[in-house]
Image 1: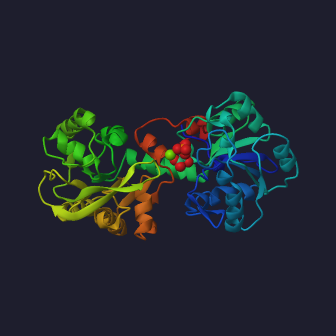
Image 2: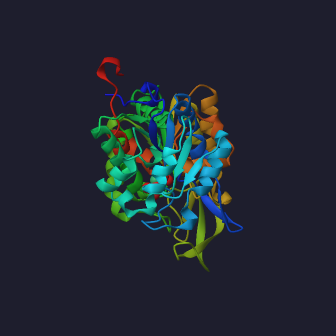
Length: 424
Ligand code: 3PG
Ligand code: MG
């Protein structure tokens, strides 16, 4: 049965409406201040907030930022987000430096219809990720109605993504999806259920293990699957090719082989790169954020063999692969893209990812529906200036993957259903 949305909510006037949003935005310290690098996740909630304001609701927004693990971390405060939201929505947003207790109660008591309050990072409490029922009940103390617009966090069964909804529902209150959540479920769900064909899927990224459940499910729906990124080398290994120093998951070779067999049995075109850009790794003295030596990629070159040279790693798809993948995309009526074709953060290895982004944008212009499954592919499209040239870009990373795998998301499962009389 279909999930209730805020369009279905009739009498919101004066109602304290607890809205879970995903404001887990990328931030960076500049001159001692935290600044927001990308406001997409804030911007995408504005239609929901405006509709609720128009309906006379009092909006209490809750969100997490980063992974503070139950401790107050000044660098992970949502205060800069409150300021940014206020600027973007054109009205004051009151910030409360807590998410439960007296300060919240006092701020909510002062609210008038259409007012907005943003609560402090819910993950400053360990009870949030533990989905502690008592904590959820404390948060729900200010909620007459619950709205979830945080698709990006809907794969988490945490207190304010799941527990608060359960408390509100148990009291007979309504729990609805926001407009962003509704759009995400429509594009990543309904639209891919019965896609216009050919349905072409482009999957990239480092690991087969991250994507195998998605591959397995899409093998039942897609006409063609294009593989890029380091995970292509695990498939090559399964075919007996040499992979040199490329990133491979040797323990996933069986899984890769099973996917290749399934594609053959179902007559799904399953394309692997036929050439690539390889480079020789040289360890430097520098350490990355995780304390591992930074690799200097030397002597980037096109490799036209399916075998990778012993001293090199594959870091991007090559020109012949770009041509083949672009042609497949050009013939598509529905496109789903998740994951880059290579190490696109380094511009020497961004050509393949940019070419795919361009092919997807071109196909969209001539009538294909293109759906981008979040994370790095969204970053790559935006970097190429093509973010507004596709049909839909998801705001979820992990959430979109789990949803594409066919899993029920706890944050969605906790919402009310539309009454059956007016369902569908
Ligand atoms: C995300 O950015 O992936 C979501 O906001 C969820 O964050 P999390 O992975 O820390 O739960
Ligand atoms: Mg995540």
